[in-house]
Structures are given as C-alpha cells and as structure tokens.
Length: 206
Image 1: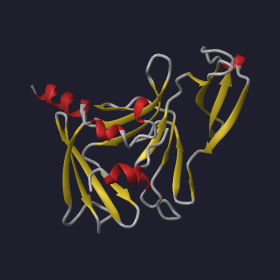
Image 2 (image 1 turned 180 degrees about the vertical axis):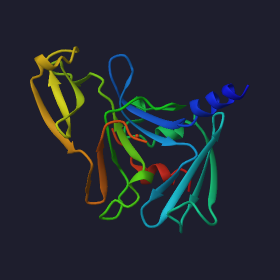
Image 3 (image 1 turned 90 degrees about the vertical axis):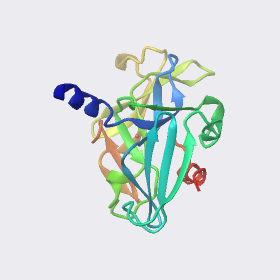
Image 4 (image 1 turned 180 degrees about the horizontal axis):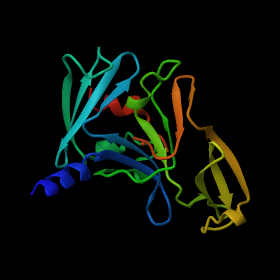
C-alpha cells in the first residue's frame, strides 16, 4: 500500500492550472502558462499568491504585503470551467483553461517584473514553450517551432509541417539561456510555464 501512496503523491505533485492559447494542428500546446498548485508565486510590489484546487474548484489566496505568502491573505474562489477565465487570455476564442500536468517544454521566461537580479525567479509565473511544429504563416503555409540550440531558444521557420532541420528556411533568436534581463528571467530546457497578461488575470480574483 505504501508504494501506491507514494506514486499518487508524485503523480499529482506538479498538477497546474494551464492556460493554452497557441497550439499545433493536433491541438497540442506550443505556448502556455502553468500556475502550479501548492506553490507560492511572487508578484511585483511585494505581493504574492498561492493557488489550490478541489476538483474543478480553484481557490487563490492573495497576499498584498508579502512576497512569500505569509501573513493575512485575501481568499477568492472560482471554477476552471468559468468562461470568465478565458477572457483573461489574449484571445479568449482560442484559449483553453485546464487543470492538468503541464506539457514538456524547451524554454521559459518570467512574465512578472522582478528586481534587477531576478531574486524571485524561482517563484514567478512564466510563459513556457514546447518544440511542437505549428503553422506560423497562414498566407504562405510556413510552419515554425521553438528549438534550444547553442545557448539560445530560437524560432525556426520551415516550408511544411514536418519541421525537419535539413529543410529549415531560417531561425531567429528569441532569448539567451539563463539570463536576467531588466527583471525578467530567461531559461532553456525543462526546469524544477503565448503570454497572458498576469495583472489582468490577478484582477479576476481581487
């Protein structure tokens, strides 16, 4: 019985509230945000938040005077199926909101402004990118994907939906790995989460 309990604990350890607004032709995520349940997230101006859930019910506790989820917080509750959550994506019509394990990804960057040293980089909400091949230009049929190469994350362009490296037309650097730039952390590879305006998202719970 003990090994079953340990397996369940591990399986749900990284369950998250996942916002996906950029997908490939099969509906798999290309870019997404994941807010991990049971983790304290830093928001600028010395504020923080802590998300939990019970089934589809989502509870968030916001701390306006603490960067570490301590002290007295304001608690609000919503539901993952509430259409209002989709309104806080950049495009509500193409956005999905789910409670699930986040997809594997090749790079991420924070979307909450930290200090100049990115002191809270392990606890900021992030945008994450996978290496899925997606249609990036509907007019000429070109496809793109994100690749981690030579210390950078690149966006590569291809003539078709195979996204084969030997057919790559061009690549454009998106960010350098493991760099703090103006309060935002940029990293490559899968760590330890298309961008949603975080401050607007938080306003839903205030």
